[in-house]
Amino acid sequence: MDAQGAAAPALALDADARLLAVLLDGMEVGLAALDRDGVVTHWNREATRLLGWTAGEAVGRDGLAGWALRPADAEAVHIQLTDGHGAGRIHEFALTTRDGRRVLVRAQAHPLTAADGGPLGLYFAFSEAGAQVELERSLGLAEAMLDEAPTGVVLVDADLRPAAVGESAARWLDCERNALLGHPLGEVLGDGVQELEAALQHVLATGKPLTGVKLWAALRAEPGRRRCWRSEFVRLGSPLGEEPVPLGVAWFFEDVTLHEQAEQEGTVLRFRASQLRRAGQAAAECEDAMEAAIGYLDFVLAGFADRALLDVLDRPRAHGDTGSGPLVRAAMSPGGGLGAVGGLGHEAVLEPTGLPVRYSEVHPAVRAVEQTVTVASSDSGVPPQADWAVLRRWPADTVHALCTPLRSGGRTLGVLTFLRGPGRHRFDRADTAYAEDIAARVAVAVDLAAARRAAAGQDRPPGQQG
Image (tube, rainbow, N blue to C red):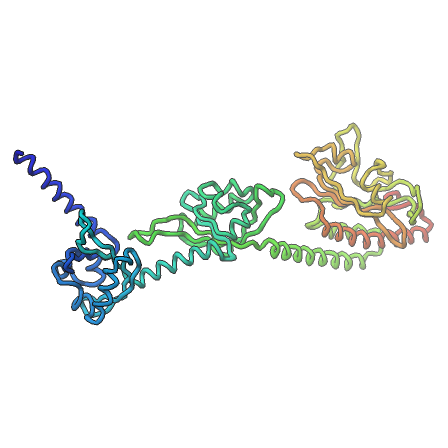
């Protein structure tokens, strides 16, 4: 073999030795190795950082006793490290630092064997037990929050895609925990996803947490049901770099839909009660009972409906009566400026004219009078169809209506109709109860106005006077 061929294996061995040295010094745990006679052969940089003993001071020493171990602990530690059945097992013992302190470490020992199976020694990797316990606690906290915490937790990466989903979060998002991982939030959320992503982007960009954020959203699987989530957002950063590296955002949230709905309903009820009280006070100051009835409409429309129509019968209808005459428009609110409703070759004037309103026999207002029950009606067309409203003699932009009969003294006096345009939801049970409360008050005023007209010798209903 020539000199060049002989040098090649030596160069390879030298490169391997250098690579091994770099790997040992780059480890994030302390590492020490002992040969079969117990002499220290390796001591890396992290071991020096933890205990203070340099590699020059450690390598070549006979065992660890007397310098890295107290003599009283040496035998017990030696048994733990050399126990062949405990290879890879976690051991805890105290090592001594260069300045005489004792540091509790956690170590894993592994035996070294030759090619023929004979023992060469052992090595053990160790780290400070306190740091390990802190890491384990952090991992345990993360697992508990994801698996058992009642608060929903979603960890979102820098691309705003879920990287981990907690059990409660998966339940509220109505999906499997792994089904959402790596997918856009928009695949699960419909309405409200833009607000959520805006909050995530803000925290990711600024690093400042957001607390107490109430997000209203709807799942794609249930677009008609909106949910309220009280949310907290915290940016996640890597603790390993000198500069914090954004890893994503932790989104903590809880479902407060029922609480928020109850608060909203309470606010609405308080406002409506206040409006009725103000309307009653204003009505008490009206000399004309019909003016008091119209005043009720002006007060209660706020936050409830866009328009109100008051239609009265020529002759009050007692229970069991049939054929009480046509409905006549007595009042409307808001008054004036609404013009006429057309589009089918005829005009349907909203304001009082003294002429009977040309309702069909199946019109909701007629049904409310005949059946003495509140009748709700909504346009099911998407987008809203103008013909639906015009056929019912209502403004073309009407999409929801509620017709409530006026009852007083055991008789039906007419009907009160509330109309809502686009952008408003249909009338619900609470709206129906409120409309019936209004109708009861308006009916008393209409009945009183009719009684006064009869006493004065006038038998025409409001809207036909003058």
